[in-house]
Image (cartoon, rainbow, N blue to C red; front, side):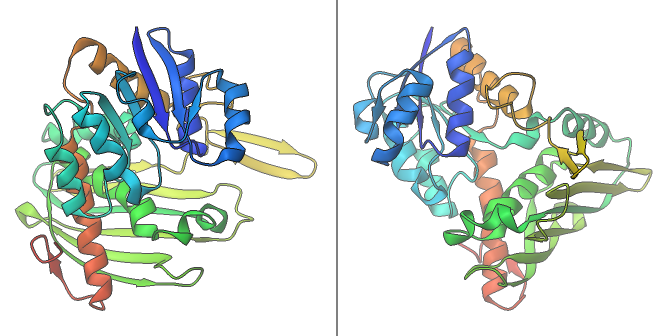
Length: 329
């Protein structure tokens, strides 16, 4: 039985905790949340102690999910890695390639760290990867990826991060996972309309092999839109193309007052039941830890995604001037 903990008990942390709590091979032994107002509700829901500091759990757990705000990932993740704990850290791995590398350097072995890139566990994405990697499309020509959401999504994260870090990090990893391509240069333009950060970003990306692409991210869609996510991927090659609609409108709930499209694919229900990509992600992390197997999403993959967003931000700061991988560090 693996002893597990979750650090950072916001919405994502509670999803992780719910999955651990119901996993037959896991004993959820503690949570870390600095907000004192959250302590009793979390105790009531999960039935485990709630700590204020990670130091109280370092020698008591085998696996941990780090779901803190992005900029806190290094200071939260590194102590657990140095204590020999297997860590699943939510994306992005860090908010700079330098911090991401510090996390990688703290690993006792390459399999101790996995990064929470949830799209890698979407069956449609896995199938697209199989088609592209099989060579059926022939030499790749261009790749387009987009992820746009409603303004409600931006309310809390926009206080501390940009849409490129919050949404674009998904797409940076998605392209790499499906195609195997590495971004070598980015030119990006953005605009802040809701916050102090870029709320809409359009980037042109050059990948190795002379493949070109585009990446679009915003959280500016009106809240009245029934489906809060407009997302997808298109890969075009000499012999064909692969396209995925990642908008997640799997369930339509209609009443006399209107209709709402629900997402049943990514997130478990409030009770953390049912099949979902995040459940698969956590269960694969647990399986790898129990078997001593390789990390489902190695730290190097998380670092690669961070570098793409880092280049994007460097280009934004340079008013769209192209930025190469070595220029953004």
